Image 1 (cartoon, rainbow, N blue to C red):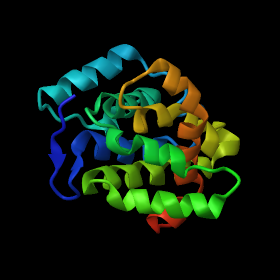
Image 2 (cartoon, rainbow, N blue to C red):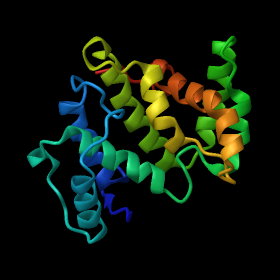
Image 3 (cartoon, rainbow, N blue to C red):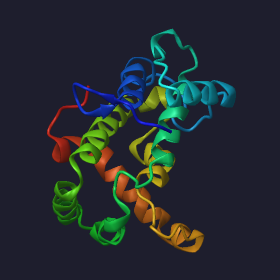
Image 4 (cartoon, one colour):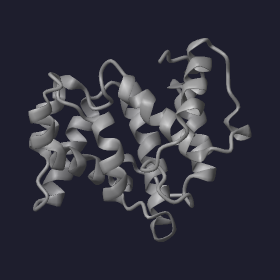
Length: 191
């Protein structure tokens, strides 16, 4: 998927448009990011963006399709948000029994990411944190969101299925930390 940029925040337009839409329509939508959107709608949106045709998501009624296009964008990045080159460090940083130590290590790694990756991650995690505020209604806790999004955010460089399966819990844990401790990592309150 091509990435035309939003000139104001240096965030790809498809990401900012999807996040803006999902910030309004996603928090109270049951199964957001877990339930699949209509594939035809997702493909139409992808094709339009690849051709440079802007889409006004505000006219879209298929919330799960917008969540699906955002996941597709993340999945198709040539290098994931938490870069291939630092995959091992992200995996090694996570220790579920040492939350403060894990947060410290993750903050160091976060500071080493390219600015665009860090900005997209912050925007996405802010959305996820806002979604978790309504988890009783939408059934999406921070761990449920991490399960749905983590494989698109942190991937092993060789795409080894064995390694992916071995590290799945840790990969999910890293992303769950970003959501659960959003304010600690990104310094903004949940909305």
